Length: 220
Image 1 (tube, helix red, strand yellow):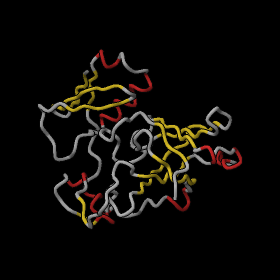
Image 2: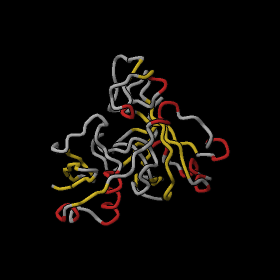
Image 3: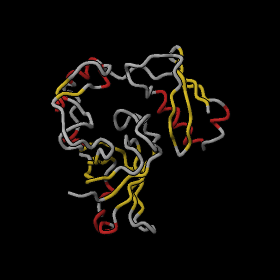
Image 4: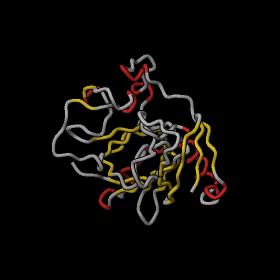
């Protein structure tokens, strides 16, 4: 098995990427295909779908050995669960699965067909093994059980306060996406030090933030 494409996103490192796909729809990514797959016929009919499944490589999580248990961030990083009961990147085969929304498809570009998607939880340059259309009549199960994740639902979004110097770095749409990402609280669940300064790379820019009383203050 080999990658058929890679994705361009605004995240230059793993820190800050939403913990699941679809949490921040304002995040725009572009899937660029390898030369041998840049054939317009391979995309015929894709325009009729609204969402895709991405199967991709946890390229920054390759390890020679695997562990039968991992520590999910949802549980504070202290409780161990079976690797097959989690979405941890540290698995026997480091394969990721994400559901994204199709923003647009460009068939005739210098790089061949491009598929623009929203809500991806992938780092810039992540290899893509395959794309498959999302089918709501089979892929959606509203009554499905969530296991231990059912008791650790996403917390209320944090309030985000952005310094004017940071605002000047980004176009309006990118600034909105950044604020939505930070509102998800990208810190590890076990870290709650209000004096700690965190760094985040977004759109090629390095910014910093602190969290005080459920408010994120963003600065250079």
